[in-house]
Amino acid sequence: MEHVALLAATLCYLFSFGHTLFALGANRFRPGRFNFIAMSLGAAAQGWYLSMRGAVEHSCPIGNLSETLIFLAWSIALIYLVIGPAYRLSLMGAFTAPLVLLLQILALLLPETTPASFFRPNPWVETHAALSLVAYGAFGLACVAGLMFLVQEGQLKSRHPAPIFHHLPPISILSEAILRLLWIGLLGLTISFAAGLLAHLAVAGGKFWFSLLIWLLYAAILTGAKLGALTGRRFAIAASAAFLIALLLLPVIQHLSARASS
Amino acid sequence: MNILCAGLNHRTAHLDVRERFAVRESEMTEMLVRLRGIEGVSGAVMLSTCNRVELYASALCPLRALDGFRFLLSQKAGLEAPLYHHANPQAIRHLFRVASGLDSMVIGETEILGQVKKAYSVAAEAGAATRPLHRLFQHAFRVAKSVRSETQITSGPTSVGSVAVELAGKIFGSLEGRRVMILGAGAVSERTARSLQSRGVRSVIVSNRTYERAAELAAEIGGMALHFDHWEKAFSDIDILISSTNAPHLILTPEKLSPLMKLRKGKPLFVIDLAVPRDADVAINSIDGVFLYDIGSLEQIASQSLDIRRKEVDRCESLIDEHVGGFLTWMRKTHWTEEPQRNF
Image 1 (cartoon, each protein chain N blue to C red):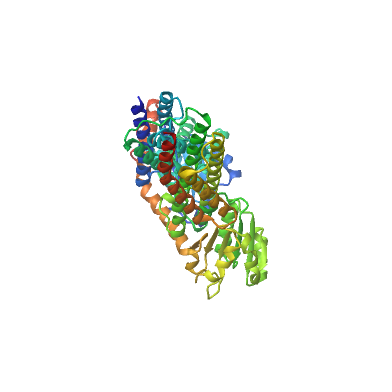
Image 2 (image 1 turned 90 degrees about the vertical axis):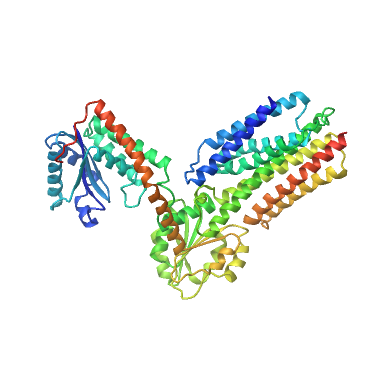
């Protein structure tokens, strides 16, 4: 059943992405419910998979990199389902779907490993890890909004906008969405660190320093934005690049966490 | 029973002619009463806009109804009415095309649907709309909705003013409370500023070499006049700059704008250069946060939108054909129709 859930989620995201690509290619795109429904079903299927894994492991199902990536993809999809309609960010689903799909496919391609059981002794560790991934989800969506900003800004600068321009949201709205998502992410990461302290996790070692590096990176971006030093295009690039760095560091942090627990 | 459509529009009659046949709102009820007085006419809906004057009638003999309508219009205008006419199914198709904006001067414009709805509502209130006309117009509204949602016929803006409004919307989101500065009080910049005002822009600053002209335009559009030598002082507060001076040299250069942009703390600036020769150096478009559009690029976007709309016409016509078929089927089922008259 776990495989069925994963396959269903993958197909939903694939449909969402494919449908938008086809509609845009045929110049027949209309903001509608299809993307939202497909993403909702995808997130529901992922949630089903994660709940099954959680029941098996008796803890938050992020014991190996594959589960971590699926949990992250699920977080991104869930945050999109909340943020997308609230901001009326047309096409955000189309930009989110490939990222979620990519994470999902990566998770499926990874060799199966036995999940580490580093949560069982302490629920604060579980809270720490889960909140970190939710924060990553917010950063992921900020990256998506950043990419949308760059596409739309490029369209505006070109002075010969392509049809996609009419469907993308205004850059001011995207900028605002990036800012709020980064704040949500940073807040989540901060609470996650606090939970880590309550769990008496080691304030040393590679995992700690890498995590702190990500926190500092996002704090620096938000400070730059607050001071007016990082605005518009540079802000969008920073939000997108920071997530790429965070995503590259995720397997390292996952590996160091698993090693520390064994 | 037949559906008759007869009238004149922007393609068949010049504005000078159309305005003589136009029926004002205050005259409409009386006109409907007179139309229903024509022998064989059971119901009538009359559409009178700046681009068309049309009658939709349910009539036993369309030819007689047409003669009666021609007589009424000619009597009103004092000249022979150059009418086109259709009986069903062409009359039905014509109304569906009109309601969908396919018969409009600017293809795909949506204002016409509101005008058709208004004409129908006036006729319904006056008791001039019969059952087939009720059904026909309700169906026309559904067709218009379907054409709009299933095709790109309303895609993109089609005038310089509406392009400017859409671009501003794509930069700032809502235009509510945005501030505009007009450099050079030209007619095009005035129209563009008015388009922006219609979307929520509240504050307009007008700066012109002749202060009196700036004050005059500012008074007309409810803005504020500023001496031309001082326009840079208000720069950090504005969001949109419309430039249309007669200056022989460039007014907006990277050297001038770059330091001013630093004062704006990252706020984007939309520069609309309507001047010929241009007021803005194209290099300012590469400054972070500056979006420059000149009259050429605005016109090109409007033209692209019209191209997209034109390409969609065939799809719209197919949709309309399906609906015409559906309506004719309903007419046959309810015995509201006879074979179209061959001599009409």
